[in-house]
Length: 356
Image: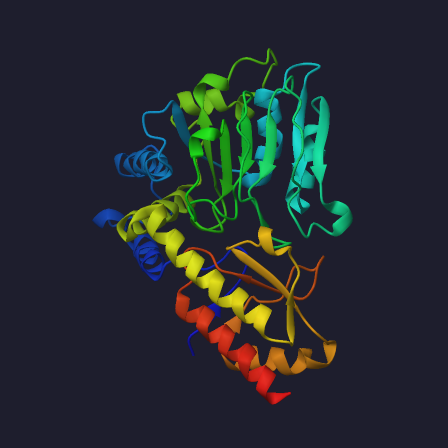
């Protein structure tokens, strides 16, 4: 039976990425060696890293604009620590937007480095919307935000124009929609949503903002050192980087971000239309902030839960339960999710309505 994988991450990737990755595990570049065993200093893998870094910048429209792309270990959570280490001055301060669980985790780490000003928060409303009309202190060393809140199904639709660096966690919607990426000083994203398997994070840094905070930075946490070493300061996560490269190649061949944005909007429109139409379901996020990546919704009554879950299983739909802290359902519709899978889910929702 075909599976329709709505997992929030690690999640679905393009079928051709699975196939090429599987082949590389057996025999990479006809070398009779596995991608899992080759040296990260080998000519073959150096080429992979160089192309992956260049292609990330190309797809984001940041080529030749003073940015460097890095593939680092530690996941996006490591960047909660690295961003303030690299940007916050001694006795400095940073501004943070609290829009969800991961934004809150980033704030927790930043507090170890200096004053952390929370300019807006939707915590009291269980993060059902993205805070707006906030004011960012002009003397902050940087402003940090989270573009898409995976757990609560909300997404920033606009970003401020600032004279200070803007740092953004784009883990769950990077490469999914058109944004003026040149607004940001640092963009970071765990690979396991729209880019590859878990094990690496993409960090895109505007070089000119580094080296200005006067702080001693441990070598492994220093963006400048990783840039100088061309993302190989230590042994990189070879396989996740390779699979990420394959995904970026797939996206480029598809037509890049403009092409995938149209597909993602079609998927989200289809599902949200059914959520709003069907009396058995209701969305949990404020409509204007609904995420195109993660649609969160509830059943009108727990009485239908067992029936709906059984229908989902019968249809081959997996990964739909909401995060344990929220409950309900969460349909994660990342780039590789085909429209067909969303159509299957919508049909199950309609069938439930007809049954009860």
